[in-house]
Image (tube, rainbow, N blue to C red; front, side, top):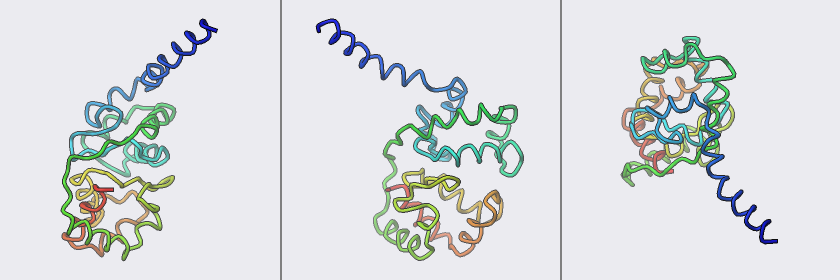
Length: 186
């Protein structure tokens, strides 16, 4: 019994180490910009932790194939195989950490009202958890969210078959800021 207990305890203690080692080697490169476990501290970079695996894979493919462009990301994924891109779904299983950004409660209320009005949860789901090809936007950085919505509105980002572009066209700059205040607090 004692040996089984010691073995079980050793196995339980080793489990977190095994999980930490489960990160693909490619993920170590991502950490420089997207933070440990995909929790970016650079607020203009997206938080990958908890993002849907399918969405991440498709975005990486879009960077590779020129449907989406970024001076840092496009070259980083240029030579990766599909299997290497799939390995980066590792970040989907990581837990997003709370943000340091302090949302303005009045702006967040206006952002929620705008989200309700534009039916954002039809695609992003309740709690903005995302699904399949639709990103998780809950808890995403304020700066990143504002930039993406502005890019959709200005048609600088068009890799979504026009869905977000048509929604973003209805948003004012204040709406975009209010939505970002709302989403970062979820």
